[in-house]
Length: 90
Image (spheres, rainbow, N blue to C red):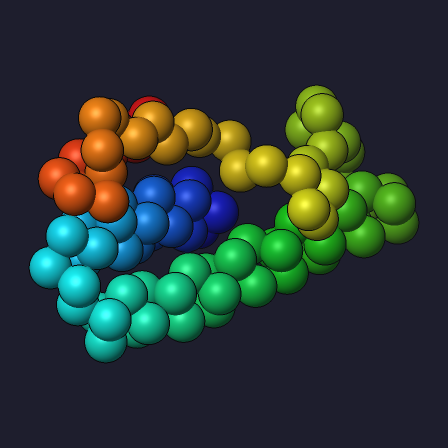
């Protein structure tokens, strides 16, 4: 589920950037709202996992991602993303 949310976050971010050249402010606003909801769900999952680890319910998986840490993928803006909308998500 967390992996799916991370992929959804990356796709939504890519969609948001693609709307900039056309000045589709409604689409950008919708994407921003979607990103806020996705990030809240990711944070909730991470906090629940952290609590389960603290309680000893589940073992630690390795490094713990804490709220506010960067997401585990990078977005590279190619050339002038504002004009072309080109992005690369890894």
